[in-house]
Length: 227
Ligand SMILES: [Ca+2]
Ligand SMILES: [Ca+2]
Ligand SMILES: [Ca+2]
Ligand SMILES: [Ca+2]
Image 1 (tube, rainbow, N blue to C red):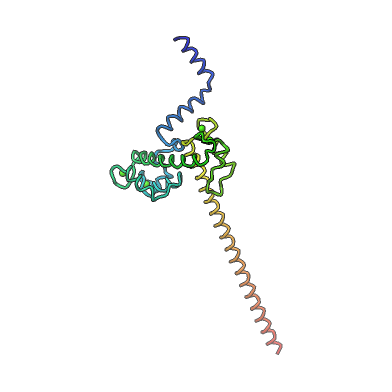
Image 2 (cartoon, rainbow, N blue to C red):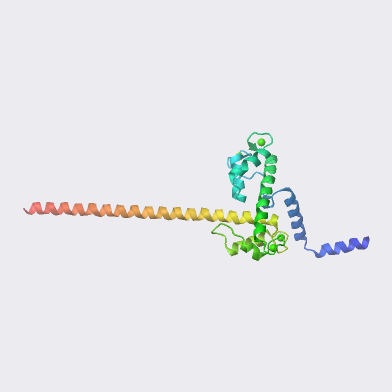
């Protein structure tokens, strides 16, 4: 017994302690909360747009769409199921239930996506298979998939399983939404710049016209004097 204990201690001493602690923390996180947002409060300010500490249907819809691309018409039932006291708002406890339901749906979506790209049918994705996933976003590059693959292969086995794919998919989706916002912003700035230039051009033409008219008048007056 003592020998066994000693062997275990030696084994522990050789393992990387930081890694073990991180692994344990991740295990706790994955059984309690959504691992991607464990460090935030349960109802984050980003989610709780009106800041009343509760989640409304609209806030819940935005959250599910942003993270998982789940459309709002599917959310009503989940929301109603989680809203135990039927007051139209989710408390922290109710929101945890809601998030569980949404995550089940996200898992369903991830499993379908995985099955579509799992060429060798081993139930998980290697990097090459992950790169074959068709993401409907212009911003999704091979590099981004590679980055997401490494980041969300939480158990570091070189594969993405269905649970890991939920967060990988969310990450790629969030990047795409950020990209769209940036493109939109750039387009808006470009349009504003064009409009400003157009206005300046018009003002310049107007000035030139006035200048010409003035010259014309002066010329006429000059001629009158000469007469
Ligand atoms: Ca709220
Ligand atoms: Ca409620
Ligand atoms: Ca596979
Ligand atoms: Ca993995």
